[in-house]
Image (tube, rainbow, N blue to C red; front, side, top):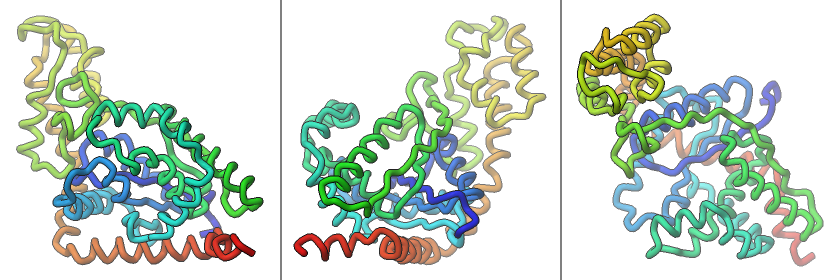
Length: 330
């Protein structure tokens, strides 16, 4: 592992089958990071409990997410991929870190206030302490870098503050401050062309959808709202379909759509059909790999369990957390 530039950690809540927003916002970056870094990717099921009313779908959602990660190109022979709750040491560290974290700091965080607005009837202790558990996730494995978008930078700075407080309070250097690895995270709009793509808004396209279902959903996408008739010139600059063309279509197709839309040479339906065709072609290898991996579900669970064992080895080799616990009253 020494030829790599350092260790990267990232985690995501188990939301089941992943959609285009997940793909462009995180998954492609996960795959790319493997070239230069030792990567640890966690499916953070304990975090999910903070807003869940039932765990009925938790196991299946975990499996579907792991399946998508593997199909997109996460290489379990190189990277460590596991379920958060399968490494209980993270809860131990979470407890230690909570002792140096002021309650007011947590309740002042914008993310906490957002969660309260979204679900005012379920303000639980786990929700308040969510950032502390997130910090434990990151520093348990002595992660050097955490990939974040610019808007997420305050979350990592919180983790760095907690690490400094911990090391100062207990006169140790057992925990290291992770560095930000700023990544470009595109805002992928949903089918409505207004809100960010997400399952809660039901405005998403799942990567594992069939080509037919993908095409059906693409045909519902909102385009230029000012273009009422087929003969009206359009404005690709305000069209969500054109934005996605620029990601999944060839330069030739992008140029053609850009020109023809402006002079009403192509209609919105034909534009959407072309995008759907190109999107399906792009996702074809992913879907084939997913189908192949899905033939052996036990292999997926074995990969996650092996990842947990390797994660525990990283933790016990590197950070001396157990020794810190032993030394508390010496």
